[in-house]
Structures are given as structure tokens and as C-alpha cells.
Image 1 (cartoon, helix red, strand yellow):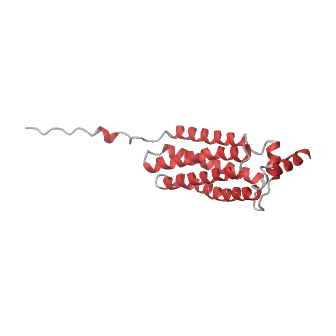
Image 2 (tube, rainbow, N blue to C red):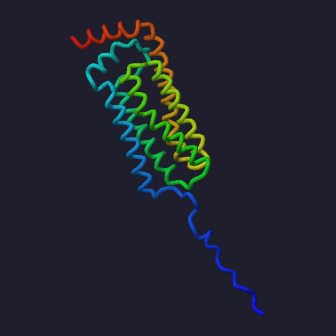
Image 3 (tube, helix red, strand yellow):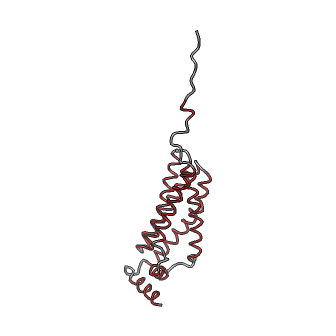
Length: 196
């Protein structure tokens, strides 16, 4: 009597369930998300004259970087954010990867949300909360990515450092300007700056 022939296990030949997007898809999605958030934020930013005048009228600590430095820093950080997102989206699905992606998406949402709240709504206290939430999302992304893709975790680390600084700076700006009678003093200062 002959022995039955064992057939190959087809499940072992397939890619793992929940494998990430292709490299091209992951890069396109990550780039589109970061660009959309960046453009949404920029539409509310200090590029607009009235917004620039309002921002100039705020009392700020001496450690506030010049606008050129802030813009250049964000340019580098957005490239790293895009790289991290693409790598995480390309990685096979796992709890750590999915948690890292959730943190990544939260960070991207904060990218546009902070400027909308700080510059658009001119709510410095609420913007500090948005910045803190963005920092928490970034930290969650790093924690998950460290178990999934260390390059992605490393790419997010400079952003976490910047957000730590920026959240403290935002809180200080809020503290220095919160007693302005509903912003009346700031509006007066902004009008003076615009009339020059």
C-alpha cells in the first residue's frame, strides 16, 4: 500500500495576511497626506498680512525662533514624516505597526490642525492642547514603530523633539497673552502694525 502524498501548504506560500501597501502606494499616500495637511495649515498661517500682524503683536519669549528657521525646520520634519509614514504603510500589518500608523495619522492631523487653531482661530490655549496631542500621537508612533521599523521610528524622533519644544513655546505664548481682555489688546496692536 502506498503512502499518501503530502500536498504543499498553500497558506505558507502566500504573503502574510494584512501585508502593507506596495512601496509606490505607500509613498503616494504618505506624500499626499503630508502635503494636504501642510497646505491646509499654510492656508491659515502667518503668510497672510493680517495674521502676520496679529502674530507679531503677541508677547513671545526670547527663545522664539525667527519665521525663516521655523519654516525650514518644518520642511525637513515634513520630509521625515512622509518617509516614516511610507515605511509604516509598506510594513506588514501587526498590532505595533497599526498602533504606529494611528499615531502617524494623528500627527499628520495635528500638522494642519495646529495652524488652524493658533493662526486661524487665534486660540493660543487651545492650540497648545493641539500641540500636546500631536506630541502624544508622535510619541505613540515612535513607540509602535520601534517594534516594527526602526528607520520609521528614527525618522519621527526629530519631530518629537521639535514638538516638545514647540508645545512648551506655545504654552508660554498663551500664558503671556491670556490676560488681554478677549484679545482686545492684541487686536489694537495688530491694527497698529498693519497701519505702518
